[in-house]
Length: 416
Ligand code: DI6
Ligand code: FE
Image (cartoon, rainbow, N blue to C red; front, side, top):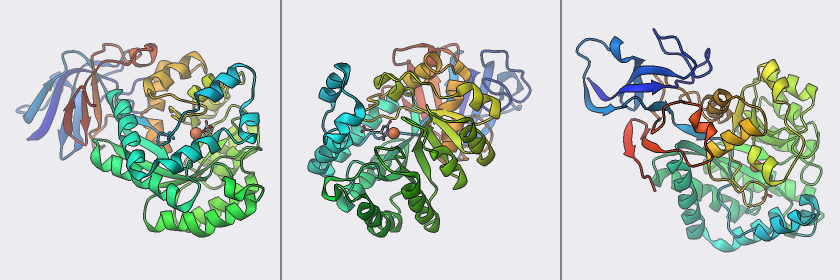
């Protein structure tokens, strides 16, 4: 007896081997597998296949009629800064008028403007912002989301951000994974003393976040105007001592060697990568580190240099796509829109974009238990009011979601 059985669905399983994934006993025909069924027991996928191959006498407590509609793994947004207060719209206006991101940051705007607003917000406000924004992502089909700190930069506010993320994960039907991003910018009280700030991060905030189990991973921003590879390396060594995996904002505005650095530390992911070199591609491939593409930031910053998607593809580097939801460079709260931009701006195929928002995104978070429709994986599912899997990336509208299933529990839309 199963807990849940979805029948007559078009399956995009996103398992490896075929663009939209394979189904036991059925060839994938270029648009997912029609006439599929999927069963759930104890929050996990217990059976996937063709409706007509269901075992004789198969029964479930609850049945969902797919009605021929598309069933996919729940979406995974593996890179966000969605907890932040304040607005940076005026900076965007200034950039439209010709100001550069680095010049605005050097004048005390940029990340530090958001740090001021976030420090002033207080924990209750941070939680309500987190709930509202994660709610927006859930309505778009997200079932797992990563949330970074990095707009507090002091002990109290960094931990408050991570706690708000954890709390939101406990209150909403979603998995929240947290990353401690202490090396995001040098805070004003350490102006001109970046090394002292690094000592404080290594000596105080990182150990406190680890001891309170508030961080699932450690991230940093490696750019000439942020932190150097040598500084990031010290952070990664310390993260390794504490047993925390690492990831890195790398090669976004320049080739700083960040991808090779994070690969050397067996990092989960290298993110952005517009300026990634051939050596960086090879390093990611050798380490099995995921390349996370963030086309929302490329668009919002009006960049012209593309990440080397063809080289990453040729080298077999798994490519994920994420929103990078943040107030300065990627104010984007729709993962399917990020998928669309990944295709239209970076040249991903629609199937690569969906793999990038499911299987590869789960891997970028170190989660081996989700991201595809396969027996034994967590039953995080989306049933869409769509027919063809490419529609998810093709549309710039919020795609119509009928039902989200999270660890086997059914949530019908709307989810807010
Ligand atoms: N992610 C980041 O952390 C930076 N850029 C990006 O894409 C800075 C975000 C910000 O300006 O607040
Ligand atoms: Fe980011």
